[in-house]
Length: 110
Image (cartoon, rainbow, N blue to C red; front, side):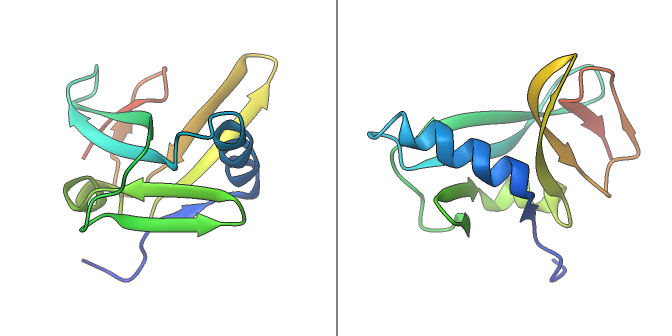
């Protein structure tokens, strides 16, 4: 594993902090990679109460993101961003390891 890790954009940090403040029983946003999706892998976003011992913990202001070690293999060097435009609002992962992605922005291949 390289030392690139994963980063959180300012926009994503603000949105995550806002979501967590409205859900006081939740501690963090978990980002994970699952098999499936139209390009082979897909990102999953969940609000969670607990972190696991081997999670990568990203903290930026009031935003806390957890990534499990298996997902980190696929996400190393990525940036978690939040997009708010005329097409809608969504979290997006800018992943330098992805060689292809689909139009929905949540599915990718390596």
